[in-house]
Amino acid sequence: MIVSTNSARLAYIGHATVGLGMDGVRILTDPLVRRRVVHLYRYVLPPDPRWLVPPDAILISHLHLDHCDIPSLRRIGADTRVIVPRGAGTVLTRHGFRTVEELAPGETTTVGTVSVTATPATHSGFRPPSGPTAIPLGYLISGSRRLYFAGDTDLFPGMTDLAAELDVALLPVWGWGRILGPGHLDPHRAAEALTLLQPRLAIPIHWGTYARIGLVGRMPNFLTQPPHLFVGEAARLAPGVPVRVLQPGGEIDLP
Image (cartoon, rainbow, N blue to C red; front, side, top):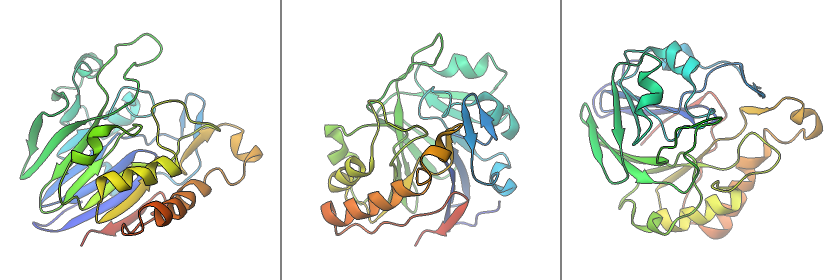
């Protein structure tokens, strides 16, 4: 996908996978594009192939299997630059990825004209079933717009000071199971995060894409309800922050 200078387009590809084209640079987060991953099934259409053309960089937030999926990364290309948490590089290099860069919270790198800063996250960094453990991250992506991709995290005190003049917050609002374990935002806590971040726009992610096989039959609203609960909580707790719900596969031009 060609992105012209000073334009910005964002696609919610599904789960924690977001495609961003900004200032002539293309970035992809936590690619997960397979139909089935272990016990999870993808209930929406496959990603638009335009977003799977090798980007300028891939950002990996942590090593859980639904965020660092080796077959999905291979589909995009082993020569693609992959930016990962400190301690995660060996997972990629032993699978043949040739351009891997590690960041710790607070460290910054550049992708073309865009800067990428690793931010803290409150989550497990262990890769099942046998490790390693790497520091979980979010990312602050700064160019003509400033976006925060939270990865998987719970609230943490430093959210208040992550970024001034934040244009877009990409916040997880659920997951793939009936309940959320520790280190996650649900619709209410994601709305609380808006009171700390104060972005100009919030887009809920990490919902509506994958579920445990058999779960949707027992909980028919599971794939559709979380972002709308978030909209309601955001209107109550952070009424000054507009929310845009993108269905998996949806795209938006960022003003």
